[in-house]
Length: 192
Image 1 (cartoon, rainbow, N blue to C red):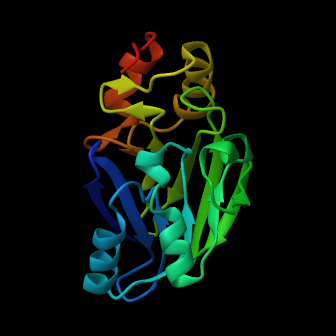
Image 2 (image 1 turned 180 degrees about the vertical axis):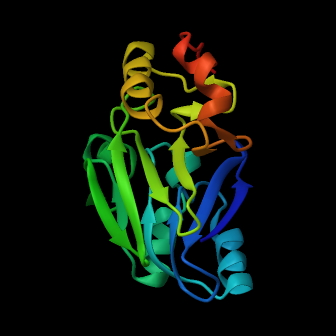
């Protein structure tokens, strides 16, 4: 599986392109502010064709370029309906479901707390790995701002049950694993 990630915009939010391999169709996750040019560069470098945009939550640093990419490539933008008011473009509603996009199976899990419509995206790689794109729900060594009670429940119910070697790709900062974060997350993490 191919995962291409980069930080964009003033808030250095992570945007990811996910594909089965170079030269394949892909999904674009969280194209925030100033992400169009780096997305197009990554598409060209890896020979990728975008099939959809997935958004972990509706804040501009994660969704600002979604509309431009949707218009340019004629692709849908998927967002949880509880965040529709935050993104002034037409979107497809996400729910707890599994999407088949670009030859990938993407499990969507609602993790409210940072925003009412925050979600995480879970994927198993053909190589046997496990990935979770966490948006602003969890970072390396921190959790997102927002409703701390809801965030704690989302982390407890959705992320803590995962295997220690599950790789977390957060919305800001570097990657981590559930194993590295387990003690911190289980012990009542403080807001970032």
